[in-house]
Image 1 (cartoon, rainbow over the protein chains, first blue to last red):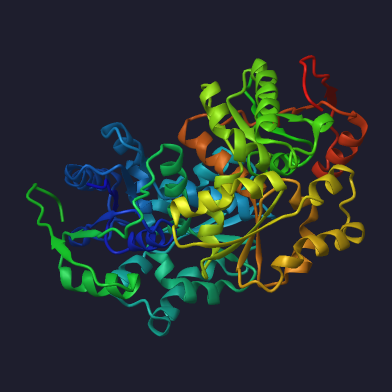
Image 2 (image 1 turned 30 degrees about the horizontal axis):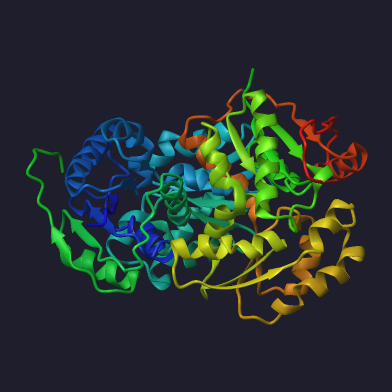
Length: 269
Length: 269
């Protein structure tokens, strides 16, 4: 039985990582958990997000995955170290891959970051960027409306343009040469974000870059799947499965089956 | 005393990795060894290249580095596994980072590779690409004239255009969307290669991508330098130091000091 990569998110955002894993690592099996019943994570306290992330990891670990990917920037910002201590397999977050890619890309040393309230408040990107390159200048902006917009399936350019314009207003004209999409929901809005920021600002998708780093870590740990077969992925969600299924199939361009999960633990919703 | 990243190459090619390490990881100290006395490695037998690589690693290991980077595609193709067994610190080659970056980039699934005779003959890129993504189509071409040209310092666009045109002729017009510069000497010739291949073919530098992966592996192994200070790098070369110094300072845009090394072991030159 092939060991899978377990990917989790507050909702549908982590599907942007899954899509890139499917493209960059076509032999890898993915098990995905979208915590749609408790989405969005952005406005929640760090403690709550840590508890939710632990619950999902405890659920996923029963499938004996070879790696856990916290495909949610908010959860990465507050729960990555905690989960790394909890399990013995590699755990990847989505923040440091995006930070490394932005450092590789930038020529001006000036980088923009957008994310949820929780991610921006944590200053996790500033920390990840300056840990490596102390003189990087960062403009960051919380865009709390964007992830919930995507969760509702409203990410076509027509409907999202206005909310994207409003959200990015404070960053337009700032002298950055790249902008980190510091929430895995934002690649759904790439066209609108790109048209607002203009051609001189390269968008760095934390989702795409994380898929690349999953590939790197699997290679260096001798964990790459090399069966030659296309795997069958598994999807779980804690909320209403129909909207999740619709968004997922539209985004991944393939049919999927979803297993609904009802939290049996006492939890704050 | 800060532990360094040890970088080795047949000559000046690995300086393209060093330049990117200096840019992407400004706090990391580098120890560089260019085996200019025995360059080029491209036409040599696999056995010879393995012996030379071992000798350099044995030399560098005395400085207690935290990582070894085989910044030579020819040596990576034939000696990476051997060196990994020989030392207990992480050893990175330059082939799989370039392969992963090309897979991330390509939309057509058709990728070009140029390298030395030794690299192309080894089929190391085909292997690295298809290990991850079995249906990738690869056009590869040995360009034996290019690395020696760079070693002589003849890499300005005027002088290199003709030899680059001749070398790439078999690849021009092939339906690839990216071309892996599968020799660390080739980023010296980026302008000429880019003008020959045209705007629809993105160049993937194995050097730039390796620097990015050095950053990834240092982070995941908790080995990142975080002193806040700029380090002083060290350079060694086995051949005539003056030309090496001239090329290195011109490429790195900073002054360096070089320690010449004379091989004391019996060796084939």
